[in-house]
Length: 353
Ligand code: PMP
Image (cartoon, rainbow, N blue to C red; front, side, top):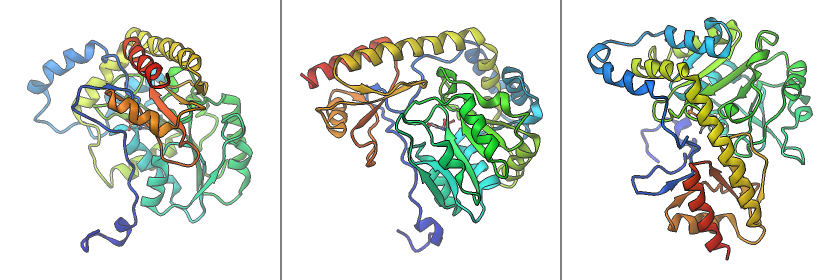
C-alpha cells in the first residue's frame, strides 16, 4: 500500500495470470498452443526490421481488420482489434458496462471479468451454473435493470460449450444492453455467435489469436459486432492509445489468418489430443468435464486439487489450480503435445499409485 496510489487503486484486486517460468518444465497452465504459428509468420518477421520498425503503425489496423473480416465473413466495419482480447474486454467494459445497474455474469467464469468490474466500479450479479455446467440463461436475463451480460463460450475454466440456440434465447430476452460472448476458445469445437451479429445489434463477440493461432506472445485480440458497438470501442481506444496494435502484430496476424491449412491441422491435433487425454484421465479415476476448449477441467475423488498441483509442480509439470470454493478440488490442464500429455499421465499414475 502506498500513499501515492489513488483511492480506487488501493481497492483493486488485480488478476493473477498463470505462472510463466524460465525453468524447463512441461507447461500446461495457461492454455497456450503447443504447436508453432503458421510458417508464413517467420517470413514476415525477417522483413520487418528494415521495412516497418521506424514508422508508427496504422491506427485503424485496416489491413488486419480486412483480413479478419474475410476470415469471419463479416464487414471490416464490424471488426475491432486490440492488444490481446484482454485489452478488448477492458475497452468493452468501459464502453458498454459502466452503468449504475449490476452486470450479469455466471458465477464460474473467466476470472478477469470481476477484476475489470472492480477497476471500472461496475457491480456484478453472479449466477450459479445449472447442474450440467451450463450458464443459466433464465437467471442471466431475469433482472430488467442491468448494465449488460458477459460470459465465455466455451466457458472458462469449465470448457463447456453452449449452443447457438442457447445464446440466441438469451439475446431474444436481453435487448436493452450489450451481451458480450467471449470466444477465446471457440475454435476448439464450439459454434461461433459471429453469425448472429447482423440480427442482434447488441451482441459483441470477442476472440483472440493467442489460442488457436498460437500467438499468445504477440498480444492480438478482436471484437466483432454491429457498427455502433465497434464505434463505441473505437471511442474508448482513441481516448486511451491510438496504436494498441503494433505493425508487427498486424503483419503476423494477417500471415496467420492466411494459412488456413496450418490452422485446421493444429486445431485438429489439439482436439484429438484432448479427447485422448480425457479418456486416460478417466481411466485414472478422474472426473473430467466435457470440453470444447484447449484445456480440461478435472478432479479426482481421492486426491485434493492443491495436492496434485503441488506434486506435479515438483515433477516439473505446471497446470492450473484455482483457490476458489467451487473449483478448489479441480485442476485445469492445458492440452499440450501428445508427448507432454504422456508425461503428465505418467506423473499422475505415479502420484495416484
Ligand atoms: N478470455 C478468456 C476466457 C481467456 O481464458 C483468456 C486467456 N487468459 C482471454 C480472454 C484473454 O486472452 P488474450 O488476452 O491472450 O487474447
